[in-house]
Amino acid sequence: MSEAIIDAVRSRYGAVAKSGLSSEQDGVRAVAEAFGYSQEELASIPAGANPGLSCGNPIALAGLREGETVVDLGSGGGLDVFLAASKVGPTGRAVGIDMTPEMIELARRNAAKLEGAVSNVEFYQATIDELPLCDGTVDCVISNCVINLAPDKKGVFREVARVLKPGGRLAVSDIALKRPLPPEVLDNVPAYVACIAGAITAEEYRQGLLEAGFGEVMIVDSGADLNAYAQVDGQAGCCSPAMDVTVRGAIALVQLRRGRSMRSERVAHQQADQVTPLAPRARPHANAPFDARARFRDTSRQRA
Ligand SMILES: C[S@@+](CC[C@H](N)C(=O)[O-])C[C@H]1O[C@@H](n2cnc3c(N)ncnc32)[C@H](O)[C@@H]1O
Image (cartoon, rainbow, N blue to C red; front, side, top):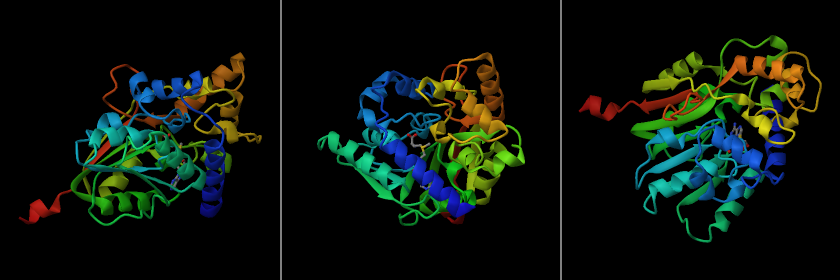
């Protein structure tokens, strides 16, 4: 199923990249604000860098410093890459990785809009389980609502560990499962593309990171409301406009969220109860999501 998944995900996000969704639309901006971005942050980057696909704000927990190299897994239109670039400054590097060619083109077009104001951003097309980066060269890896979409999550954690410097860190916002999904949803490609069927539990996340060599893993449930996506016209979940097929189980519930009936409200809550976003702990209000932050073991110090 892995190749079919990759193709479906690429096709869906390729369409989103060409959709023109941006912070200029109130609903799209509201999604990013609901997941922790300030109006000032959004105004500081090209509007098209935010097509409303985030589920948290990993920049808020990354603790980026001047001169650092930061890599964003699944960078989309460049939202977090541009924000990271201003934090690491001209002596640092902000690198975006995405497997969808249309997303890479969109991100590069957005970078061009900054007209040379930002010289430290780069975007490369690749899957996040095979990063085009050298071993031990990255200070911080960030990711926003992407790892749930990767079929080989162990491969992703292994690659992150490989590219990080000793003591380097990972800051992720993502969707985690609160409880197992029904088999008919697990095997459903549209549910996968909508960031549901590929999600794992927070405990699986923690185990995966520990197995990959991370020393400290902190995961916080943000409690953010996944219904935020319904503020975008015709959208019910992360990328769920793709769900124009009729399926049974939880996925159909998401599709129903498009409407405004009582039934739609009820099923949307059920869906939100099954999956929960991983996001920043630093968010001040009760809607703060699940947050995954990890530090890679510094074995060089242990040897010394
Ligand atoms: C939900 S969007 C999030 C985009 C961006 N992080 C944001 O918050 O706006 C997922 C992005 O990850 C990319 N993606 C999904 N699976 C991927 C994989 N296995 N390798 C690389 N990129 C992937 C998609 O092309 C898409 O741009």
